[in-house]
Image (cartoon, rainbow, N blue to C red):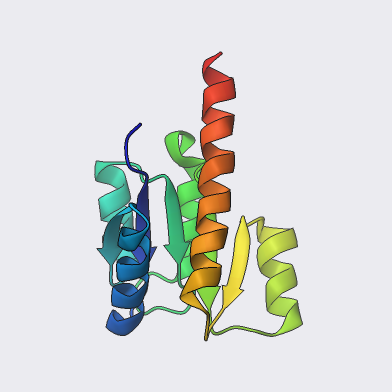
Amino acid sequence: MMEPVVLVVDDDQDTRDLLGRALEHEGITVWKAPNGREALERIAESAPDLVLLDLMMPDVDGWEVYRQIKATVALKDCPVVVITAKAQGIDRVLGLHIAGVDDYITKPFQPEEVIARVNTHLTIYRLKKDLALK
């Protein structure tokens, strides 16, 4: 089985590096993008298995990246986990229930929690893909 690929999109270099190291330690291939524009360019080249997405970024914000991912037929089932400093209850409701992101993690976060959630979503994504192929 091929290593899963996770795209980490965050304008903070330290966050990208921390998540990258933690995911690579789990045997996950990591692609990194410092902004939404570069994330969309990378996704256009090849689809990741999951996207870890910051919302508040200059250039193209996370919501626009999310909208474009879900509007792309080949990516519509790709799990998107938001990682953001927007920790208010209403932000979670907007993200999870209205926009339909797969998960919502607030900063500061524990890398172990992110890894656990990523692994869960990757497992679900693989199972869905396997069922669709049958």
